[in-house]
Length: 510
Ligand code: SF4
Ligand code: SF4
Image (cartoon, rainbow, N blue to C red; front, side, top):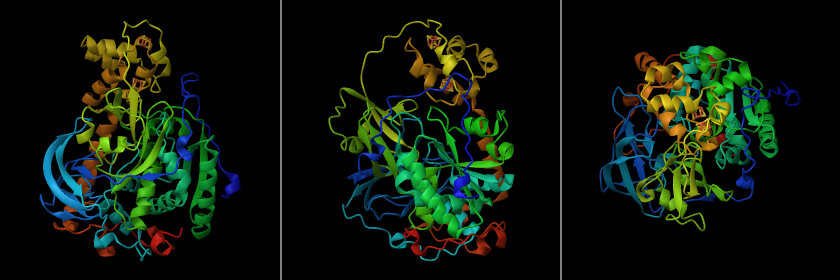
């Protein structure tokens, strides 16, 4: 398909009436140059992904370098490794609790302010004539997870796509929550990395059709991606890259909404996008990270994050994973922590931070939002119907919240409480100031939502296949885990047809 023949597919109005447009969205994404944050210390939790907690492989007092692996999966568990994003000394290893309720060990590193890279990641990868199985090994050992917020190890998604025999890779640039704009920045400014990452991951999944999902009004980003796609397709004529344009509204990047919009399919409890629609969805920041690991030889040590005051001011910064929230807030002028509420995430789906000094950003943190404290007058439900009208999952949050309050759990289940995707919309629109999301989403999470059940099955399958034998490949010690697999070490699934060849020496010139 040529670039002039893009498929245009507009998101159907979810129920003909309920999509939200946020006129207050800021355009600061392209107005302010990307800043880098160099924190004085980082706190690296050993569980930043969907799966099991890693174990630290460094000791207190040990000196670590950028890119060095400091946490690995326990034998027989499902996890991906964790790497240091600054150089310095390990000062403490302690248990911490994150705003999302995760409790785990964390490695505290004090910066030496030298920003020294580990020898294994000093140079970009020079040998890029690598197979699909090697791509998978690099992605796994680089600790890459879904950076859009879901945190599923990317290697697990690739494995699932291979098992399902999908025929399309979807690049998710449908970030639409107000003031969370990191994905768009990546898409516009690092479009070559996103496209190369998509091609590499598509090769690993065994697919040749790549569709970029983006809002139609993001014209600058679309233009940048088109140029990159044209350049890459000239090298890889086997890959088709097309654009599927959506209206700008919230929410729409969630995989079940994508299935509804693109394929007209309502995913039931046991469906996955891979099995039902023959497609696998990757966030664009995840694909950027994949290419940074493949071409740049850099494991996942930092991420782009949006710092916003929730009123239109803010900026995108590149920060090492583990940077304390308080150090990020120092990059924003005029924020007073006493007058503000700090949110770990974006304003609709984020969680409150009670201790910004000791709360780090993790791999899945897309934004830090600061909102002014204000007294919210909470009243009884006035039966306006706005929550049900705007819920993208077609459930009635007001009713379900009442049922949960009354402990009528059976009826709440019948009302499909477990369908909630925690998008935050119902609380946002409720004129009575009720925390409907807190109530419904917490209940759904407690039930073990459908998605998690699917993932658990997925993880079990992957474990039983033995296709991700992390601990067998990882030697404990101060070594990077970026050594690619050899063909002999692969799962045996890769064959000549699944080889992809990356033509750019070092990957930086793309
Ligand atoms: S948070 Fe859950 S219940 Fe509320 S609007 Fe979103 S999906 Fe619906
Ligand atoms: S939006 Fe709030 S006030 Fe309106 S029906 Fe729902 S719960 Fe009641």
